[in-house]
Length: 217
Image (cartoon, rainbow, N blue to C red; front, side):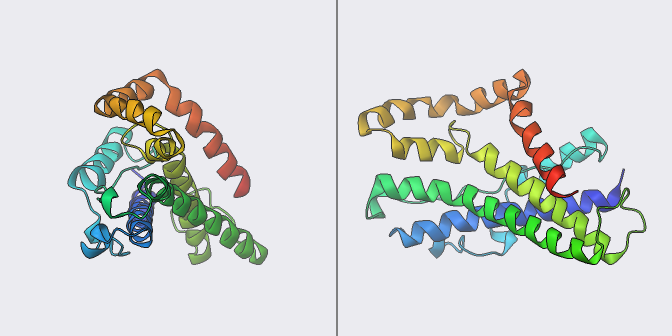
């Protein structure tokens, strides 16, 4: 196992999900619902967002199963919000759902920009994480920062409950269509599992990986 790479990925996953959930909570408060903010969920403190399964057990299982060779992924506790507190429940719900993926996309973009800047000073992605120089170590952090944040954003934009994409789609549909769409919610996890085994998610993530690798040449 490449322990340094694993630690970098764990750190980046924790940072990515913290940004993601804090964005949900902050946006909810801006649209009129203080529920999540009053619970401390608008904080950038990762401890308030940790989910025992999604933040600890699932990433650990990925590390063990892939022997440290595969990407580490996970999720945090969902951010609660009360739609009855929102000034416009449908539009508010749409933007609350959209806030998480947007925050991850912006974080990935920032990582790419920082890499392009330090590349001017000769920084390159090292072939191995062993005995890297500090600047090379930073390039690895930035690489995974872009890769994991962009992957998290794309994954959450899939319009299947309970992912953020379902909240975005519900906000765009008519009230009648949104009510029918919500009937899919109890089966959302089953649909996601089916997509995982069908290889559909690989089709989604493969272009993301290729794009990031091109940007970090």
